[in-house]
Image (cartoon, rainbow, N blue to C red; front, side, top):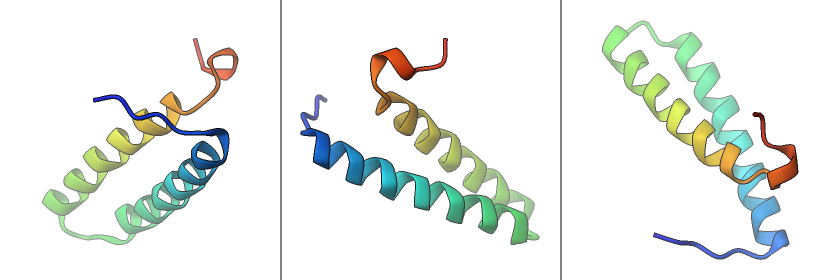
Length: 62
């Protein structure tokens, strides 16, 4: 799938993902259920990967 966004939309999506990632980190720290925590960690990694793809090419980690 390909999604074409303008710069304003990319900025909004980055902000949304940053907020969701922060919320997930807090939720991971607060949960006592190991299975649920593992699922949250998997979701966080997926969102981190999407977030990384939204960085301009010159700013991506090598």
